[in-house]
Amino acid sequence: LGRDPRKSVVGPDFQVHDARGVYVMDSAVFPTNIGVNPQHSIMGVAMQAARRLV
Image (cartoon, rainbow, N blue to C red):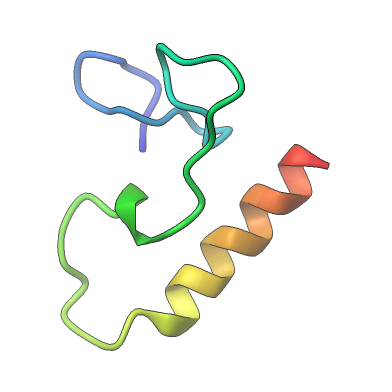
């Protein structure tokens, strides 16, 4: 997750940099393992991404 396509796959809007209309809204946007059960973090990312998408 980041602005630079050389360092990230997904932009701040959760859209894949080089694939218009393709969004990632799950733990795949986390740069590393967060070390705990990711359920709440995934739900938060999905809610934020859905708000931006709609």
